[in-house]
Image 1: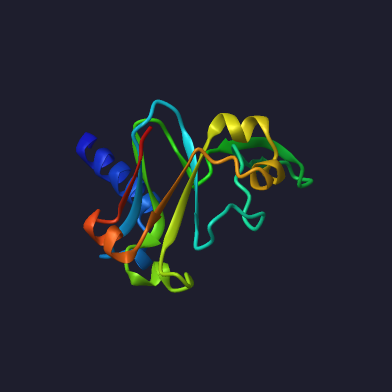
Image 2 (image 1 turned 45 degrees about the horizontal axis):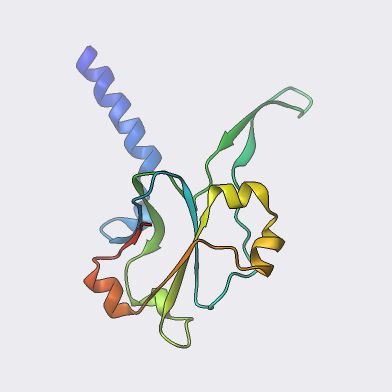
Length: 153
């Protein structure tokens, strides 16, 4: 009985993280080798833009009452956050299509400290280009790095 419960739990967890559309496909990963969380933006442009703002945390209603009022909110980490000394896949398939929209065939990875997002608005961050580091890659660079972007001091 105990083994059956463990197997069921593992299947449920697998279902939470498994995306059938990505089955068998390699993904682009971000590795954070620093002692604090960072947020990343991926762009073909040479600077941060207002198009897709980063947020410290996301929130959503987890439970409603019978009148549709939120009873309990859940706060979660956004998909562009990478914790200290960890890695996270970007959800982007690792192939040449990542550079399809980049005219100069280079892609930029902007890294923003969590403290910057806490202290400034996205408008200010973009206006002053307040990113910590920008890394630029060609398709050859991505392939030679095995589709892993490493952020370190």
